[in-house]
Image (cartoon, rainbow, N blue to C red; front, side, top):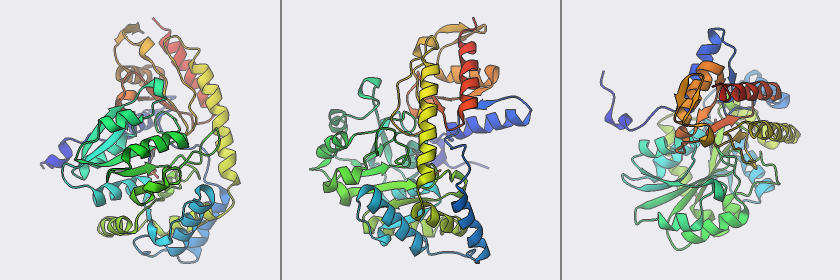
Length: 395
Ligand SMILES: Cc1ncc(COP(=O)(O)O)c(C=O)c1O
């Protein structure tokens, strides 16, 4: 059958593709080490898992309202109030199937054909595709290592046109781990002050921040509170990727429109997972802090080891659980008898020959880099980077 032309411009997620390939290799018995998945290796904390089991026993196995159970939306609003001093009513919150669906619903709710969305690169792989799905036009703005891979007010101002509808922000960032300071967010906010451009602030890594809490956009720029859609969820902070719970918080009319989208797509997020998430957002938070401390230790180790490899330069990220080293110094060389000219070729070589899965910068709009997730554990970090070093020094 013929596939729709709408899909023609949209490449499947490169990170998912690498995950699929490395899983297949593992199934074939190959000793693959994966830095590919953006997924904590920790199990879901016991109290949260128990809340899920209790939900089944209590018969919470039916549909919920489209926007999610009231108790969960209250727990989310309360968490945002406590952690970021943000005032949302539970009706300004929609619970979604992962943060991915919160983003999807946002673009569906807000974009008309040709509306432009400014996306700083390197960017998380799905922003561009989701804007295209909604008929919008992604406007990719490259950032540099010198600015810490952060969008500057000047670069933002230079890309605003009469068609600009949204600015996409992601701090802490996937793939770079960069964290915008409150001042940097205010700088971007001031560029938008006299426009009607809205902001989608993806703060899914908000709790994984190593130099104090990562500032939230609507808290740092209260003047734009009514024009900001805040995206977050349970996946990363609570090691709940498989439960599929995310949320958006924002202006009531936008959240209502998102409810409309969801009412015709997935109806509601998984009911059992919603009840587990009440414990995640509303219960004790010490497991989050423990996991975050472990990620910090791993970050220090992986950055140190990567910087020992000739041709690799790895900045120290301030949040999330990714490093984004430059491999430009290793390109154009012959490795294991093959000339490697791009980070995509390098990632392919590393997976096929050294059994190390990384994601090439091409997937994030920034060739010349690799993304490594260090959410995989200390032992795989040491072994995987050792293999990487030996592969890159094999002539
Ligand atoms: C920046 C960013 N936003 C959103 C998501 C999606 O999160 P979820 O698994 O909750 O859909 C991810 C997952 O990798 C991410 O890295």
